[in-house]
Image (cartoon, rainbow, N blue to C red; front, side):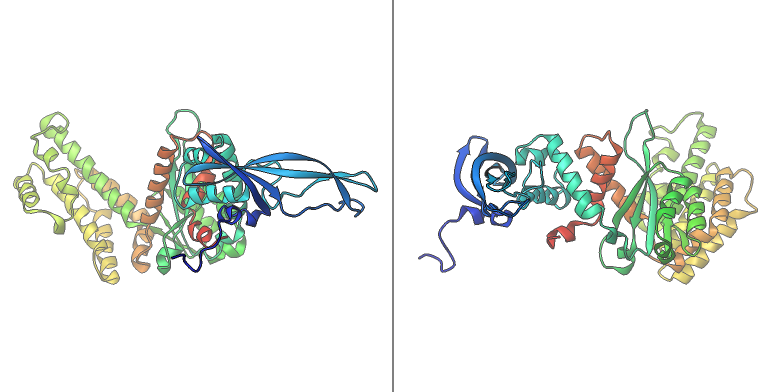
Length: 435
């Protein structure tokens, strides 16, 4: 029995050409694509210069790549009529701007499909170009231009930013040119629990001046609204924040603080290994065998790992490693303390313990103590604003690494920044809502 809502097949509606002011008048299936013959619905036969009615002169055919159906490339062959004014002799053709931009090779629906595929489905430009039946350069140029126009160039994407994350990112692994960029992340949705973090912008280089110049370009009222900046241990980000955002709180996130202590533990372990055995760690050496167990929190150790660490510290040969390991574990325990007040007190005690009176043999702890004392305010600020972390920033960095791998690398930084913003700029909801 036919369904009540079914109607006669309408290829124009099915391919959504009615949105573009076109009508299908024929079709042809080729082995690698579908070709739709179309005409412009609006006759547009009134002179654009004097207003008199024109007479048909001839026709031209304009070819546009349309959104694919069933991953079969769809080509529109649009017959465009040309007119000649009987009064002033002016010649014009039917207006097709509703279907596509002037001189564009993609229809507006095809361009929309490509942008959604890039942002929402995370397709590569090569896959999009293949589905549209156009060259890579044509697809890349059109999609990036449209993405900049409707998404990246929208000034509203900077609205409501209260928490920033900043970090460096390697955008290419070559010896020529600067391979670093500074990434700025909006962490406000994480703090407010309204959504994931999003990439706000990227600037060339990793320095105080790069981040400071980006902040200086923002309006004064926007800078005044930023409350927190999460960062790693790089002092350039700290000084740029202090100069351009004097009212914002700088927070050194737990990941980088614990990594500082973990690096000190590794350096101490390698030094003691070299002193005792005269060579780097090898299979069977106690310090080398326990290298991963040493970086595991005490509450997460298995019975086998506990036995290995107890045997490692049974004698006095590894006492320096034991002292450094104890500091590392105390830092982890401070961050895992459920009560932020107690966690802050425990971290404060660790900083005070390693800031002075450390035996000279514990060179790694002395170096760590200098760094922690210098950045004590930033480290302790985390406990006053729990949940402020650069972890989401590192997660977005991982997404950008995946993007670079999917594209087999980038050579143009401008294109890379645009692709990264479309990939991780949080535009997916806007496209789903039909921006």
